[in-house]
Length: 66
Image 1 (cartoon, rainbow, N blue to C red):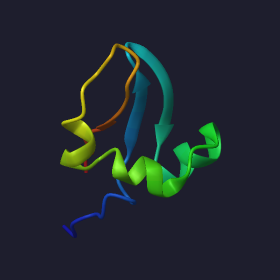
Image 2 (image 1 turned 90 degrees about the horizontal axis):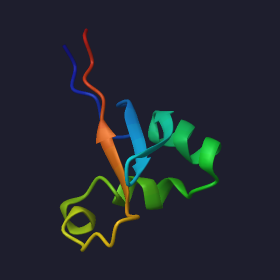
Image 3 (image 1 turned 180 degrees about the vertical axis):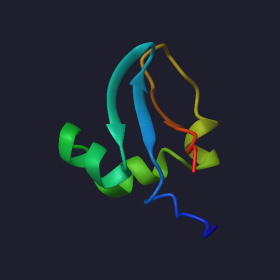
Image 4 (image 1 turned 30 degrees about the vertical axis):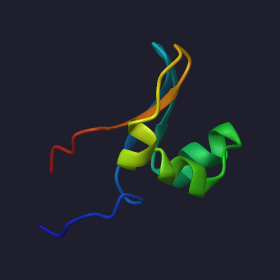
């Protein structure tokens, strides 16, 4: 099985506990008007280590059953 890039994987976007969108990073960018680069940065450790003041957006990878 080929390894998918982050851009090809399925992600779920949340703001706090609120579900925002589901899809690839490009699909989420289209649904939310967020920049592709911004969403891709949200998958990096440098973003994940930033403090959360209760309303931080987070991308979670959705497991692929293939």
